[in-house]
Image 1: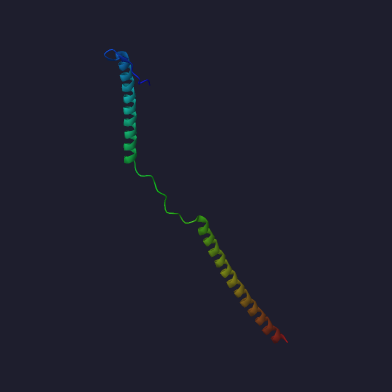
Image 2: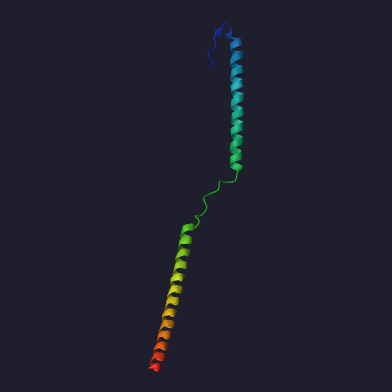
Length: 106
């Protein structure tokens, strides 16, 4: 934008002044429109609900299932130990009964 105005007899050249004022007026209108648009955007952002924040961390799914699996294995070990103890007890009873029967036969 050329802002240099030539001095003529009684002031500046009226055509140049008119041209410059027109350009400045257009620039002012454009800046005012942009300013209004930016103010509207700021207002929208101020009225918008706040951005969601990170939620509390959820318990790790793998930790949960790892603990669950460990509990199942522990229960299985206990069950196997109980079955093994009962089998030994039953076997001892069968052996004792067989020995008693064998002694009676002799």
